[in-house]
Image (tube, rainbow, N blue to C red; front, top):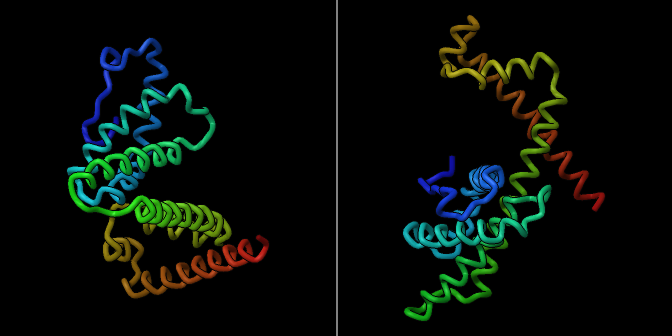
Length: 190
């Protein structure tokens, strides 16, 4: 399902290959939020970002045959969203004063860099969780994997809430140290 009620029917798109449409909709669903964030970063308000994303979805579909399978659809969609939003912002700027192309490009650089750093930290965090003892991994799974509040979880474990918080704090500290150490090592080898 594509977010925000966007629908693409085969008859609307001139689809000859329904499985290709399914692939496109799956890829679009996974990338929509970040593409929307790219557009929003440029145009600065929801109404304009919604308008831009309508256009982005059309462009993505029209150019989907050019998309190289196996590459990062999210990055491709975000770059198209950036260019469509920038063109939209230019049209708007003609009607009123606005940000320069250089300022828009810098905003997108910052947003993209932040997203890439977040993705990297998430990957490293997953590696660091894998390095924890089996007991700590199970504790995290039990604690965060259930729908119980931490107070209810503590009761189910017959432990005090403070004991649960203390153990979580120790595990989080191990994870933060591991992530920072790993990223520090990678930064030194570059």
